[in-house]
Amino acid sequence: MRGTEHTDPHHGPAGQRGYPHSDCTWPDVAEELWENVKDLPDRVIDKITHANAFNFYEIDPIAVGGGRQNCNVGALRSRATGVDTRIVSMSGKDARVQGNVDKPVTARDVWATLAGHANASPKQKSD
Image (cartoon, rainbow, N blue to C red; front, side):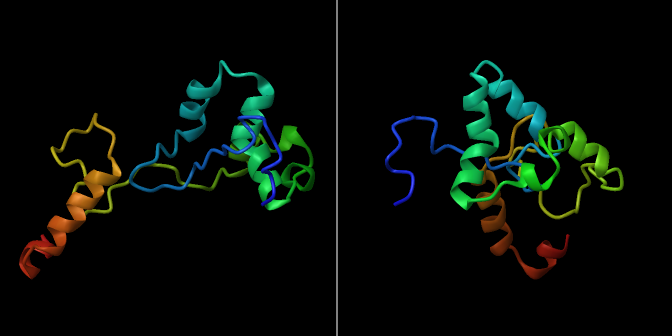
């Protein structure tokens, strides 16, 4: 298996971020990730945020994108001015089991919500 020869403990981890699903911090992913990695050495941050994934998939989007200065969060956001990043409710059941807006939604909350929805009557499902 490719990569097993490395002894660097940071060789494998890669941050999976950015897709707006119920248990992520989108659209504030970059800021929240930074709070978790800012005290690490730059080479480790690079590995976690992109280098390990680039190595795994054998790609170099930074080269294709015109260099690192064009591929950082600020540069990419400035090119995506037409992208709506507002948080919008799409109705449906609230996965925050207790309705606590300050509580992060977990996979367990989503599972419980979906399980409850599956057991509801047709009228309850449309409410």
